[in-house]
Length: 125
Image (cartoon, helix red, strand yellow):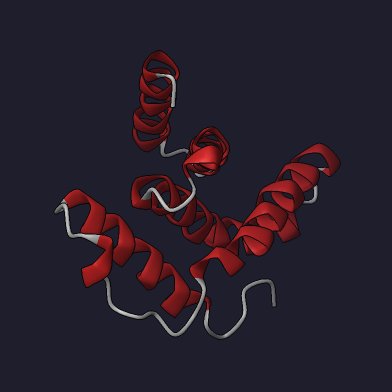
């Protein structure tokens, strides 16, 4: 099992943080989240790397197994960027999220994140 039993809840927290940024909620008003959604960074990185490795190895059985995990991976990185928790990693979140969306063949979402990379570069963030 790549994601722990609390991964779904951590992803919801990360998405909630992104929504609070979208609606301009002050950080003082954020609820206390009992789990740290940043702990999803390692397993999501593993999913991307293992999925890529399976493509290279033509390991179709494991590819199918990992395919379902790509959506969690993509949504985590997308939300991690939007939550503005760690702006120093924005490029990493955007590139990882775009890669996960691309591997899922969700090219529209990959393009949206890629456009954010260009915006981030032009603003200097």
